[in-house]
Image (cartoon, rainbow, N blue to C red):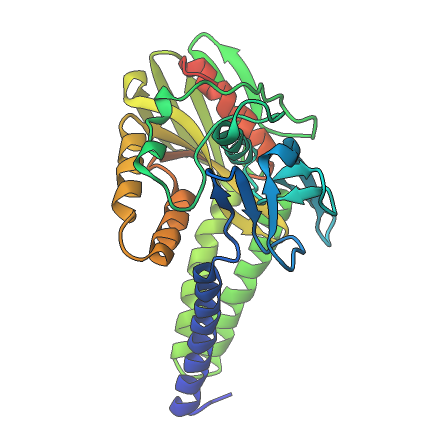
Amino acid sequence: MTPAIPVVLATFAAVYGTGFGVYWWQRQKINSGIDDLLINEVSRSLELPLTYGRKTRITARVADIKNLFVEKIEHRGNKGGTSYTYAPTLHLAGTEPATQKLADWTDELKANEFTEWLRQKFGPNIPTNAAFSTPSGLMSDSDFADPAAMPPASVEVARPAEPSRIQVTDSPGGREFYFPAARNLGTAFFTTVFMLVFNGAAVLMYRAHVPLLFPIVFGLVGVLLIFGTFNLWFRSGRITVNPTRVIAVNRWLIFSRTRQFDAGDIARFATKTGMQSGSTIFTDIKLVRVGADAAFAERAKASAVGSPASQLVAERFRQAAGPAGVTVANSLASAAEAGWLVQEMNRALGRRA
């Protein structure tokens, strides 16, 4: 195939135009506010967003809330994989159906935190099974408290019963967390296939003397896939945590990289949503340095300018990014296990779990 330059440019324009159209549609949806949970503290009521099958907003009085909990939702992929999301959920009197979901997160801790924040907003009389936090959306200055000053979480996270190759042991140097190489075999296999396809296509196009643009694009993607494939098959990690320091060692076959952090410079460990492969959404673990949470709150205050719509968009991007930190482990297939690992790392460091 030897397309003319105008055809190539038109194809790229169509691809970018479609991407921009999807982005604009999503931006308009966010700006419309249909996904927003509205809280009226004066009338002590909530207006539920137009999500989860709701065609009109449902107004729920706090007095009608019988329970507030986090529902664990199982998702099974076409290839047999299983992932979970966690939905803060209201059980209401006088509505049909009585159970109303508010949001859906892959991070169980975030769902627990939002649930407890909502309970604290309306008083302690609402039963719950969650922890503490701040929500997305527009905030007042009182919402930007230092996370270290918040009350400790009330939920003890148990290690999931699902099979795992991640090893946690106690050693003379502290608590060790070992993340073996090739622990996500399905993702590693399919990434390898894609890598071979893209690099093979680049070679074939070059030998067929197609316009140089195409082998260059496929070749660049192929190179990125080579690095990704190498990491998935050969990268292992070991994190040693004790009350004085954290040692993180990454190893690629005979190569290794060691990083050390003083405990006094570390605020906590936290989870962060990472890449997605098929129906599986992976979770990363990052080390949050002292002062990062304060900077996170300052950025939140700085984003509270402009129109309400722009504030909401900025806040959602900020919440997705979270406080700045150093990624010490990535590509954990189970968000629940990642939450447990973070709890154990914080405990070994001497921080609240």
